[in-house]
Image (tube, rainbow, N blue to C red; front, side, top):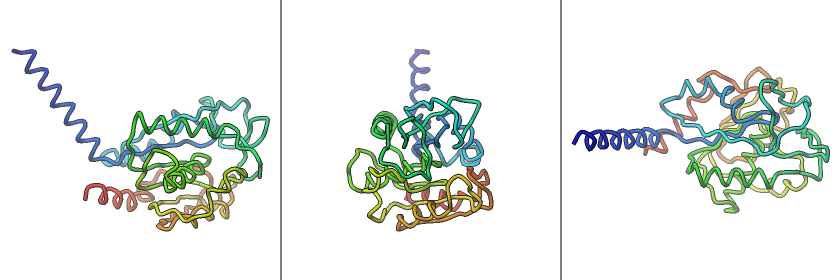
Length: 235
């Protein structure tokens, strides 16, 4: 009889956990170039702690390990990964035009698999190359190309990809609600590239900070948008 009571309590606890998660916004987090899921989790530490009652993150790692160090978003404490490369020697630079987007299809497969195994997600959040990827995913969703559905996007230091195969994705307005965050002194991604991304979204909230190419930790940067998305989910 005791085992039956324990079993019921475990079942009840699992139901409570499920309900708590359902009351949160589930967000797929896509890291920047030369980062990883582990690095990105650390960089979003303040955001996770500040909204622990509202947000539940799933971090995904890009499939392509970067073979050598370069000057873009380097983090020494962990091996770096990228979503695609735009040169034959497997390097990516946001400001370089290219006919190549090497490895992009592999990365798309990773996102689709993650959504199938760990979704559904309420929103998508991306930083830098991850933000550029998130924008393309939003367009793919709108065109019903891929089997995933996000209700909002948070784009941090995003940009329009200059890879020629991606040009086809930037000829329409995205209906998804979005929050765009970037630094007015960003030396990695020029502001005009980021502002072009903002112009793609019909419902665009914009936060411009005084810093550079990083993820702001202040809760007030995200609060209004997150609370609005929570309100939409719960009602």
